Image (tube, rainbow, N blue to C red):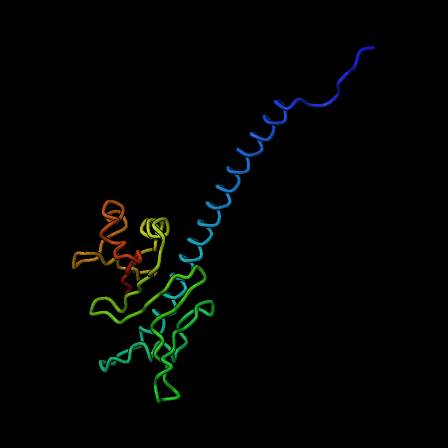
Length: 184
């Protein structure tokens, strides 16, 4: 009597497992890329929102006593999704000096007043290289519409987006990959 075998051989099973393994690794890579892209888009949204709100309040600011951030903070000129770093050591219970914020992707934002013609600078820290490059290549709009004046790098003058691509290392500086934007 002849014995018939039904089923798969060990070689066929190893082939199937190899194919499944390659697809799994590719899937994890795709998920990682999508996650990084999503985080970068969140950072762009947070910067845009923070800059727009600070710009709205800062246009009315006309004091030279250094209380720019108190003015911005009292005007609640920051998005609700950002956590404000309020000065807890102050004796003044009404102290509102939030110039540092933490965003969704653990990116730190710092807003500071700037000298004329700019109203303020916005620094994003703890960026990944991909985030930094994407921020450099993002169209932030014109100075007339969004107030964006350029990036602040190693040079004294801000750069345009086109220049930033060529000299990315100059603008994404430091160990924390920080990037500073100027707004009017």
